[in-house]
Image (tube, rainbow over all chains, first blue to last red; front, side, top):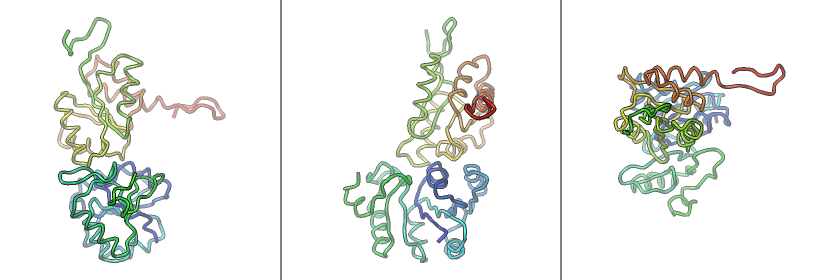
Length: 161
Length: 144
């Protein structure tokens, strides 16, 4: 499968994604799925400027991504699927074909409880992640490749270090 | 002496730029500048652990407003602080972002007090770029 990482990260394209994961995984493209960014040329240009010239960035709405995910999953190159929030990833998972989800950065916001240094969740978000796990998706938190992946159960049970 | 005065033979302690980046990048570089020159007070370090993109942007905006500075140095082209700074600079024609800053960049900046902060930042970027040196390869010292 060419989508080697399905990541939720509210910073979207940033150092951990481009350098931390992108270099060791040999990533050729990032598939950024976000309804707002997909309609903003300025936002797209902002994110394009953050990646090296040999790395492509494709911007899709959720609707377009659902239609084109099989095409990207069949791509011979390596790619990262990136969403800025849990609900967007949940909608993509519902479309099928996504077996694992990486929680890379869900930062502090009112109403959220800290689970890790880089993961804060409210009740609805926790329930959405549990729903993904119930459907057989492997959900774990891991900000960078060298860190230990923390399974969702450990994360929500508060036993993660 | 007020914080904006320049001591005899010394430098201003007035903030002239923000430094922002991953981990302890900003505090580390500003500390190094201060150890080397005593001019670290010209730089306002910002660390952003645990913050979402919107909060990073707001934090930098707040620091710019508090300090009155129009120059931002960041560490990485793809970094969250750089992204936030680009958003802040959108529509501003009197501010500048230098992404990929290093210690020689900041050292040049704090000594360029005879220039406007904007001009000093541009000059410092050139100096920082030229200061990367490769040593130990055949052929001797090479400028990157």
